Image 1 (spheres, one colour):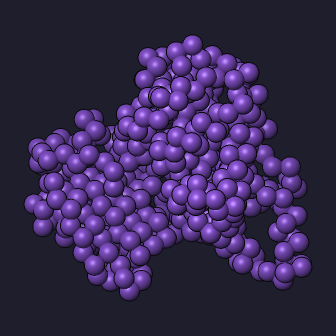
Image 2 (cartoon, rainbow, N blue to C red):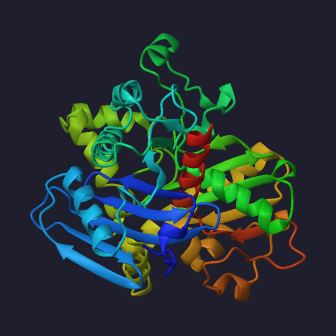
Length: 409
């Protein structure tokens, strides 16, 4: 909850959107006005389904935390409505234009913001095998809001949508074609809402038409992905059928030889569920050094922890590898951008990822790179051949805008 919360009354706003982002045991939400970008409230419910659940709500300059058991996302959303009401905002009467829901996987069916009806829910449910950790809980949020706010349209915005039209040679895996078609196996790409939003903000910051720019964007958070965007359209991205492929992440492995999986099944007698759990929750930085919080990892590395140092080096190596590949893919690169928690805040990651690229004309300005700000900023020298930026992402704003557009269409 890092947004600046407006203290004005949301009732006076003409277009209000409630944005929901449901995780397996969490729920983030934000009430905002897309046109002015004003955020009136936000909050997060954590450890849903556990005994020690809590929900924190920020509105009117106050932060309130309630510790109570939240059995499921329905109860978390009911508690959210109660917190809004206690702060003078009745979401049933405030005049919401839409509730925007982040849905991770749209498969090949959903590639635009979609107003929800019964058929949409059924179709998204069928995609749960492609994102078993994400899509079911997103649907829990959709179903709950349709009951709690039946007169407000719910809109699903899909992480995969921005990458729907990747070139065929990029989206196609070299496996048995009939099996791929039967089980919808292709590169889908994720974090699309962030990559789309940031690419537009880059053009705005540089006062250029997005159609004239070749961009590389790195969304580096606990989950991490990189994209190559030519003229506003993605031509490559690191995540694939699932959000597991590509860069080293907090708890996800990123790229791994598929032979490792069959070897573990045979030699270690691990089940598919065991392997899935290891790759998704016990790998990446956590698997390498026991720590997936980048700040703690950096502290450990600075203190001489060899495992933390290696984890950091593996992370940077994989990042450089993808940057180089995408530079070749694009041919001409105008701008490279860092975003999300690590990308926006870890100056050492930015400096090391851009290391050894002076031969391509990239010159990082150490003073600019050291600046911490919530605003877009340049971290290269004025004579750098390629511009490198830090641009904070705002997926909630993007989801809100897309939700309004879908309702008005």
